[in-house]
Length: 117
Image (cartoon, rainbow, N blue to C red; front, side):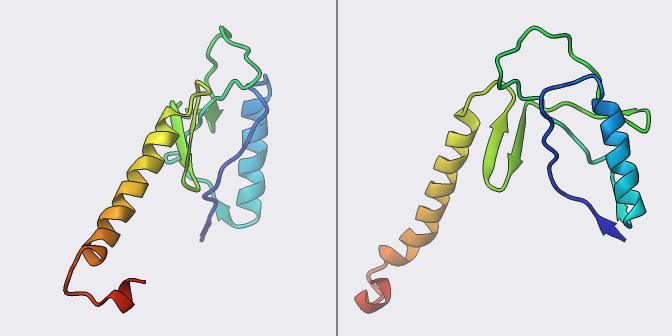
C-alpha cells in the first residue's frame, strides 16, 4: 500500500475546500494511495491580509482535520501569522547542532591538521 505524504497548497480558505479535499482523497484512493485522515493537519496562512474571517472547519470524510499554528516542510517552518520567528529559531538551532558535531573534531589537538582542512 502506498501513502501520500506531502503538502497541499490551497489559495485561501474558500467555500469549496472540503469538497476539493474529498475529490483529492477519492483520486488518491483510485490510484492505490492511502490518505490517512488521522495524521492529516492543516495550517491556514492568510497571505493576502484578510483577517477576521470566521474560522471554518476543514473536514475529510466527516472527520474534522486539526488546525495547527505552524508546519515544518523541507526544513522550513511555515507559520499561520506570516511571521518567521519559528523558522529563524529552527535554523539557528540546526547551525549550533552542526557546530557541536564539528567542534569535537576541529578542537581536538589529537586530530592531525591534514584531516581538519
